[in-house]
Length: 231
Image 1 (cartoon, rainbow, N blue to C red):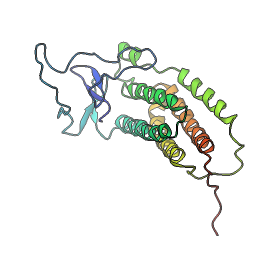
Image 2 (tube, rainbow, N blue to C red):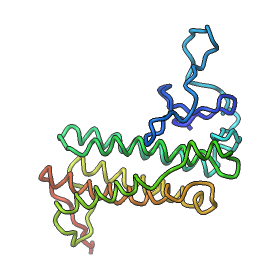
Image 3 (cartoon, rainbow, N blue to C red):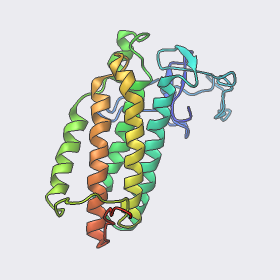
């Protein structure tokens, strides 16, 4: 799993760029900020570790599981969701949309979502749970943003198709990835392995992405394609 490389020896999580995966809400690092290299060793660390060559990866708790485990499936979908939002954000920046700071924050929160998923409660210590706890505040923020955008949109009276320009279409694509991420997280939450608010956040995030996609189309003056039954 590229975005969450978790080694039981070091108990740290890093993103592909080598930056420490941090918790957006608290500003505290999730894992140790030590270098890969030993003290006094200034060699550039390698991005590949070879520890997953046999088809197994580690959770944040140090537990080894097959790469096809539902935990890593959910992590992959969450990572893909963040990438889709990042692509949509680039289109939105080109059009001068003012909500791109919200997309930035959402991508950071998705790192927190991944941290929580990567910490299955069945093998987690209290220290693990405390460091990766997910709260309800991001859900409240999404609901506020949705309500504010909705006030500026025409009423939705028909089914619409993903459309409305590049910004809008890209946000719709991110919405569909979000739905997949939510589906993969749902059984993990039901089993008690992840915080319930993680699933709630993804559910609300898909609503946000749908709303902001419509908002982007409206602000750009692009027409949304209406669903019409084919004969």
